[in-house]
Amino acid sequence: MDSKQQFLNKSNEAKEIFLSHLSADPVIFGFENNELKVLLVKMNYRDKWLLPGGYIRKDEDLDDAVQRIIKERTGLSDVYLQEFGVFGKKARSEDYFEDFDETLFQKQRFISIGYLALYNPSNSNLVKDELSQSCEWVFLRQLNDFDMGMDHREIIEKALLALREKIAIRPIGYNLLPEKFTLSEIQKLYETILGKELNRGNFYRKIKNLGILKKLDEQRRGGAHKSPDLYTFDEENYQKALKNGLTNW
Image (tube, helix red, strand yellow):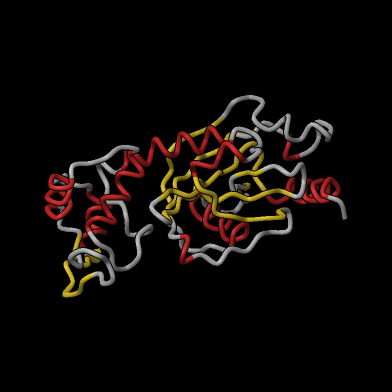
């Protein structure tokens, strides 16, 4: 079956199952080799890269729908999610579906809810869905090399801005760093997100004062210099900070 016929078949099913005019687009960021990544799918139709988004069933809550969409399109489950924006330009998807007539469900005007998500790529076992030829982690710095559809590049850019704002009021790292990490590694994460260098002494003092880290009786071995101490997140305090915000940052 060709990709166009797939969409026609799915369109007929979609009218019965999903809400009209409402979709969700999760921007799933990862952190690997001291760089940010974003999870994209390459569709069978038109060979373009998109966010792993989808539609909302008539009988499900929005947050549950986004978790389902991510699971179906990427294989990931239990992903940390937070709404960050709404996208509603009147012709968001018309060009992408220009080969179809105006009755196609997917070609209607859709308002999309943007979700910010964080996931460690090393913990992911990606599984593409039947409409996609690929599901991949892409380095953010390489995004311009990818032919993206609709307004999904804009959504990613807005998600990065939201992530930068978020780290001033909520902890970051639990979903992105390995279980054990050094202060230098968490500083690099913050610097990568913010796009600027941070003073090491000031950062170390601030991150310790947050109370979300536990120092381990272990060191990172194998370097040319003194072995740095390893830390892990204090899960209870981290969850409190997620709920109540940071007070000492």
